[in-house]
Image (cartoon, rainbow, N blue to C red; front, side):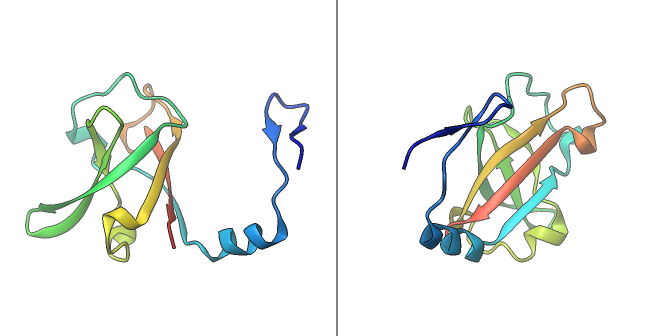
Length: 116
C-alpha cells in the first residue's frame, strides 16, 4: 500500500486489517518515569528514542530501570506497572515526550508495548 501524507507534517501508513488485530492484542503502558530526580541528568535524549528495561533489585524490591540508547539510566518503571511486567526483554519501549525543564516526575513520558 502507498504512503499517505497528512497535513500535519507527518506521514501515515494504512494498516492491514490482520495487522490491526495483532496490535490490539498487545499490552501497552504509558507512564512518566519514576525516580528521575535520583538519576544524573541526561541532556542528550529526545522524544522518539528507543528505551530498554533492565531488572534490578532496589532495596529488596524488584524494579525495572529505564535505559536510553547510550546506556544511561533515566529512571524506573513505576511500581504499580512493574509488578506485572515479567521479563524485561518482552517489552519494546520509546520516549514519547522529554521535558528537561519540567518537574522531575514528569520529565520523561514512556510507552511500553508487549512483544506478544
